[in-house]
Image 1 (cartoon, rainbow, N blue to C red):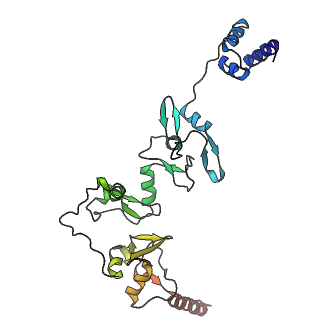
Image 2 (image 1 turned 180 degrees about the horizontal axis):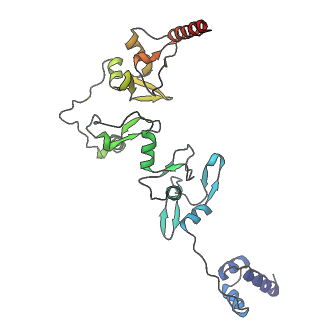
Image 3 (image 1 turned 45 degrees about the vertical axis):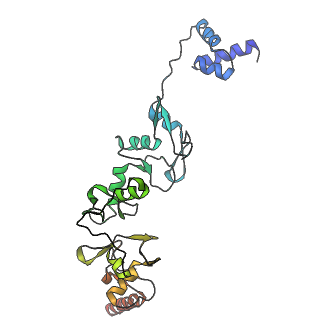
Length: 288
């Protein structure tokens, strides 16, 4: 570009409101030359406005399908976790998104539970308090009592995404064995291995109102499951056998609408479902 052409290009960009530094970068010219031309033409200096935290967040995000938001900015070198630096401080983009939605600072870690890793959509992220409240709605009743190591469930109790309760303190100590200071209180006998599948089943059940029995153990594909003797069996099939005195035929299903209920009277196998269907057919047939 000739000297005259570059001069005209500088004037054009000055009239567009660009700063001396930006014009210098675009045209690969000395910003002091740009400043001199600005003075000669009597144009005011550009006052650069610093982006707000929310504006910088928006500049580094991209909308994705189904309401998800992808982070396009900096990420942690090892974990790939979204990171944002603003005014010499590091911020979590997920926490910024949470604050944008709720208007308050988060409590604990913020992340999305929508199933998309590192999604930062404000509607998809939640903090520790929000997750606990949402998951508690899936769990029948408040957490009371203690875990087998004496940790208060009201303090250390947490919920899995499906509402299953667990002890956060025990989970932490399992992860960091060197810090494990657990010792069973003297009033609690150390739990011995179950001697039968029925005994193991009883350790993970809790009777509640209206005759229902809630399962508090493992879930396999969303269904109550019991690990015993090196194998995993259906907790519903065990409950059915305990209540009816026989092995079930076919799949065991729940006749009530209480999630994770394994009460014997609420369970049916194939012959029982067939009998129920016959009774309904007879009733509706008589009514017709």
